[in-house]
Structure formats: C-alpha cells, structure tokens
Amino acid sequence: MTKTFKMEDLDCANCAAKMERAIAKIDGVTAARVNFMGQRLTVEADDARFDGIMKEVVKTCKKVEPDCRIIL
Image (cartoon, rainbow, N blue to C red; front, top):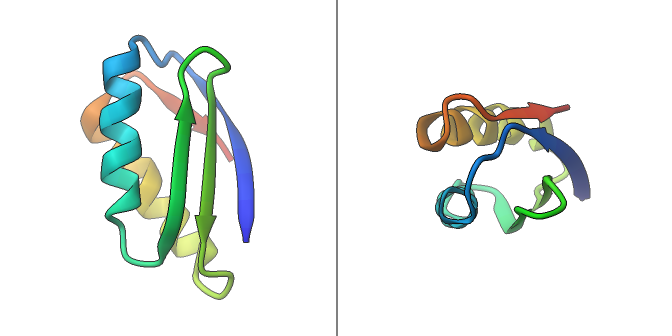
C-alpha cells in the first residue's frame, strides 16, 4: 500500500533527508519519500501492518524534527 500524507512545520531539507533515510529502515517499509518543498510524505509499506508502521513513522519523524506534524 502506498499513501501520501501532508506534513506541517518541516523546517529544512536536511531534516527531510534524515527522515526519509530513517523511515526507510523501519521494518515493513518498502519505500519512503519526503518532499521538503511540497511538505509531503509518501510511504509504501506492508498492507496488513500499515497502521502500526505509521505509528513508528510518526515517532521517527518526531525524533528528527520535534515540531513537525504528519497529518494522518
């Protein structure tokens, strides 16, 4: 399953790249793309565990950029 989410308060392209790399390492994630200019996150992950994976994605993003929000 692939879904795209809106992000708020993503402040720099470097943080976006860090998030992308960290999300890609989460078990069950096939691909992750963070578009800094568009403030969008696209995640491709296992259908059966998608909700649980997204909880991990949110935690991971908070570690990199505490002010950033993902609109689920």
